[in-house]
Every structure is written in C-alpha cells, then in structure tokens.
Amino acid sequence: MPKAILFDWDDTLAHTRPAVVESMEYVLGKYGKEPWDITKTKYRDTKKSLKENFPNFFADEAAAAYQDYLNYYTLHGYNKVVPLEEAFNFLQVCNDKKIDIFIISNKEKSLLLKEVSFCFPNIEFTKILGNGDALKNKPEPDPVFTALKDVNYKIDKNNVWLIGDTKQDTECAYSAGVQPILLGKGKFMEDNYIKDKKDSLLVFNNFTEITDYLIGILNNGSN
Image 1 (cartoon, rainbow, N blue to C red):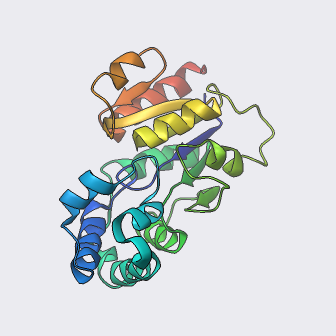
Image 2: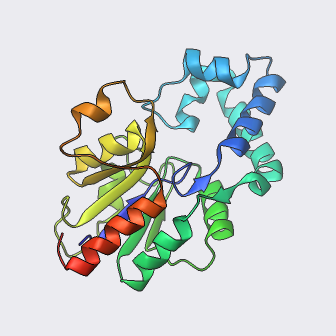
C-alpha cells in the first residue's frame, strides 16, 4: 500500500488545456508570433516547463511576455479549469485512508494554488509544489525529494506513487525510484516508450480504474 501519492496537476488532476491554450494564443498574437500549435511544435523543449520555454518562444522579450501570459491567465483562465473526471473520488479515498497526497507541478505557483483551491476545496493535500519550489523541475527527481523531505519512510516504489500524464512525470518517477503511473496515453512519448516500460509502468485510462486498483490493494492489505 502506498504511503504517499504525488500528482502532476495540468491534465492529470484538472483539465487546464483550454485555459493554457487561450492564454498562449493571446500572448503569441500580442508579440506577433506564430499560433500555439505551430510554436509548440517548432520551439518547445518538452523536458522543460512552460515558463522555461518562454525564451524559446519570445527570445529577449520572454520576461515581459511571461508576465502578459500570467496577467491574461489570471483574468480569463480560471473559469475554464475543471477537475478531471473522478479525480475527487480518488483523492477522497486517499484522505480517508490517511495516504499523504502531494502535487508536484511545473506550473507557476500562484496559478497552481488558486486552481487547486477552486477545484478541490475539501481535499487535504500534504504539500503543493509549483515551478521553482525544487532546485530543478520535472523530469528531474528534485520535486519528489523536496516534497517528501520530512517523511520517515523509505522513498521507493512500494511506498510512493507518482501519477501524471506526460513523459516528464514518468521520467521523474524513474529518476526518484518511485512507482510511475501514467494516466491516459501519455504526451510527448515516443511510440515504443510505453511498450518498453511495460514491466515497470502502470497505465490507466482514467481515475475510475486507478481508484479500483487502489481499493483492491487496500482490501488485500498488501503492496
């Protein structure tokens, strides 16, 4: 049984893509750049957070463009963010069973905290980490160890799960030595990535499946 479960945020616990895309389209248009679908394909480094990619998108105007992004997102983005289906039920099971739950996201902390409060006001998270809270962001393992620095159990795949929807999340889990759980089909993954990792990677289509899996473990009283 896991003692701690760490979650990515964007498109793992909450549907945030509409808010992100609209905000990016706005700021790209303001600075005369190509639309988001083109920009992310041509210039995005998928090993870095969105903020860390702004120099790739905007060069010397990156700092100003990122502030414009934050301002627009704050004004227009939040009403488009909703919890992922059945995520609340899974989190509630974790709270009821005294499993510590954490969020480790590469998202700007101010945006993250507001979205978490809006989507899951009645869920108790042990700790919430955003962009820059650890020395390095995912896919490096630093966010895992920063989140769990005060625990009194071994940080390994038996005690700790990491649930996410991208290769950043699974690679972070592998680097930290915890159990990677992929939600959905995986973003930014090569065609054979999931197949090659099948012996160590747990893959679920949705939170209903993950909840059933966790409850089965709890009922059996084993890892």
